[in-house]
Length: 342
Length: 260
Figure 1 (cartoon, each protein chain N blue to C red):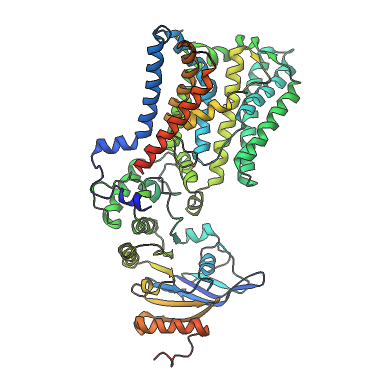
Figure 2: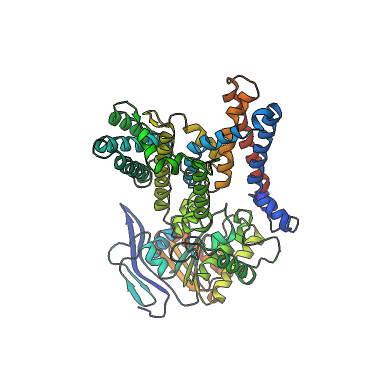
């Protein structure tokens, strides 16, 4: 603590200029953008033909939201010093609810079946997310263990409900949901990317301009002092978990409707990408700090690696190796930065 | 009952299973009075404070009056609403966050939809920094992170916050623990500020050198009972020390002759 006190902004030596302060305040965000730019520049240099063409960016805008949508509310959970490992299963669980409702109403009115199925999907996600929060807050089970459990539970529920069988979703094309969730804006911009941006901005606003966000930060830094000062930390955590649940179900629908098919294995493989996006973005695993902007940029770093490696002419065997290297280096960079700035 | 007292506790006992943490304690804090609460570890200081803040309920028979009104079941929320605020050394602040977030922790200025009024919170923090917290350097802003402040400054932030939200009685739980000499002075200056603001305080410590200079009255607890209490003017520091030694040996201050 002594060293921190010496480097305190109270000492006249510390930078007191406005620019210096701003740079310090946003150092982590600036660093993560630089990481993205460097990686992008490298891939561009290796393969200007791929990275100089719109197609690659179109592909990135379509697929990144599939997990980045979930990374955004997950950022809140991690800032509140909890973790959620179950959202991939909740993605599929929401679609299992869709499956149930759709099959029940399909014969009478397939269009209505799609809409009601969509609502059921969101409600199922909300319930599952709320349950995660409830177990963590009211039963006092650490979220790592609790959501490890619910992750299996919801995946199991999906397999039971769907009998392990998929479901064709071509009917969705006849509803307004398809262009609204999986179409193109002005024929150029994938709509799911627009949703991701809207949702990121809305979450940013709640995190920084609303009481809920203020309480998320306070809960994560020092739960006890927040409680003593009258912050309802339990309710704050439950809300954050619930948000992850709803958005995971929403993402599940977007992905399935995009593929026009529901796979019971939906969501498998998203867990680590999503978590990595949050941590790459500078959100601390110790709680109390993190930004939506960081997560947003982090998710594109994750997204660009896969096509980048292929375009650079390396075998895909390199992918995981590079993922690992970039995550470790970026997180180490942040740790050093944070210590310097403390 | 003393209607003038900010707080009056009568016949307070607290037993945990077989252990009597407090035995028939009478304790009061007058208006604009700073009471030093002295006692060894396990003397019952923190149990008494936890009853006063609504964290524990006293055993049946104990009575608590706030400003002359009998309070039947004091809860943590009720105690806060009635103006009792505790400043804990380690648990008072959120260290990763800015000054303004800490000042308004749990009591954010927001409209009825919960939208924060950042401008108002920052300008109020700026004003408090100048008037109450004594930060003059331009390098400290409402956005400065509290974790970088020294121990005394943090106590100042917590005390300023309590006063700002109209606390009537501020309880300081070992506020000087682990502080350097100059930091201790800063801290005791803030405690004097409580008196200047016309409010009352309970200053809990086991270091009598920190308590004696600022307390108006000193209450000594020993093994769950009040071993003695006296106004500061009645005794010099030396006399106080020898009395405390006697308490340690006999558990009582009754025999005054041996000290004089």
